[in-house]
Length: 340
Image 1: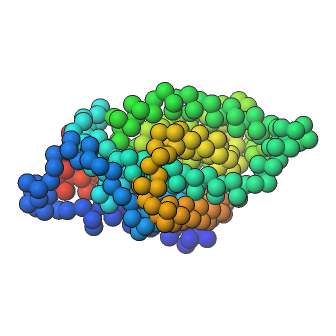
Image 2: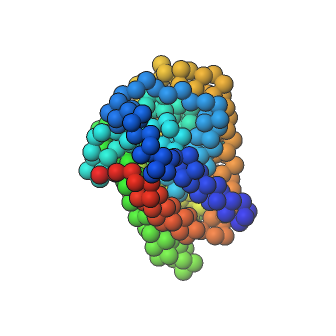
Image 3: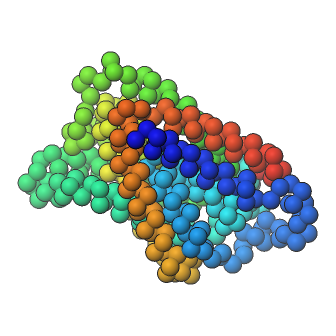
């Protein structure tokens, strides 16, 4: 299992490095400058069609990164740019020029999030049934878990609804992603060091259905941090779970279950805006490939990640995040792309 998770980290690094392989060097950019439309023109061009191969790549990246503490949004921003599905716009955000995705990418996001939603729903169907029994008054622990998840869901739902447009308009760029990757990686190493030590495990919540509403509220508030691209929803919720008294496995399980309402709501919101463009974005074949790949990869990653946590913890993912942040900044500096 150790080698499986190390393999996951290698695959993630290869996915991020795709930009180096697929994006032209500075000389090539200069040669093609006369033929390349201005950023504003690219940003307003017709939506790009996502091929079956691209759908499979994006599905694999989403499945790998959604439940690992490495940020699916950050990896997808970089992957979409690498494959030519997005480009720098002419708008300058607080931290530099913004990468602007097109409608095809936004529409295909629905498929990717649906896949990760189905993966958790399938793996945790027993917990879902327990919560339904609790709602019917036949399982007090299930009802307590349902209430805890509802409490944890509310803060991000409010902030996400209010701030989603501003975030996508101003924070989708390599610098914001790199900053979040680096800061999150350092926080992961430090928090696990202080809250994950064996001497600090006594009295911790070991069963996810024993999570208190106060603990759930803190986890939910922490989830708001994941609205910043590159942060990772799973990372902040797992770390918050550790801080408020859950053990590592219970914190991870709570994070996965919290994905059901969070990803479900985000998918519904995206569908309302871009649902009409899904088939045009990737075609029926691309939709099916993306959905299947995302669901299968996410399910495998969740099971492997839980086994990994039992013996290895979060620190390797923190190191990976810091290394990837450095690679992103070095690459964009090397290729001469003006981010400011």
